[in-house]
Image 1: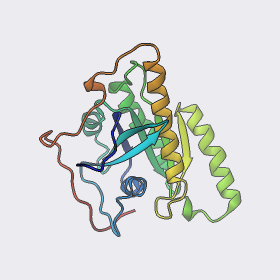
Image 2: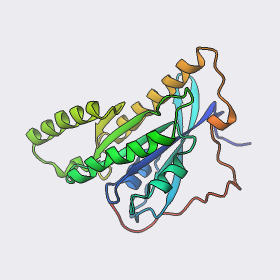
Image 3: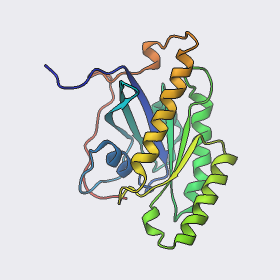
Length: 216
């Protein structure tokens, strides 16, 4: 008999951003599947985590989409049936922050939440451990808040995947936000179909890739 708890629903979250921003390390840190060294993701891979919330268990599929070529076509393919999107930038690279707007626009055009509206977005500015000045951290916090509001992100956070700073808190809050929005939809008497709660199947045609060696 399996020891895995009963799961109420499968939820899919994609994580996007430029190469080198630390997406894969963030995924592995949150799911607890981290390895000593990680290499850049070529196309995509997923990790899963059972997330207990309000007496129910949710299986979260966190899909790490490669960002080397900024391919909107690849992002669109893997965003299908997603319930949320995490956009990651590097606090030391303002271009990666600006590029997050393009990534967000790409997903918004083709991916809708189960209620027909835009899916939720979380903005993470990663590698905060490289910022030593408290004054600079405070400035980054204010800057990120303004950027997030102006570009209609649902939530934002400053993180360090390397040192596990604010990773659990930020992603946990985002997952709870998604679940609460789903529950609001269900409270209106709506029904969520199998299509809206995508499940991982052995012969789905999408392979899980092993991680090793090097990265952010």
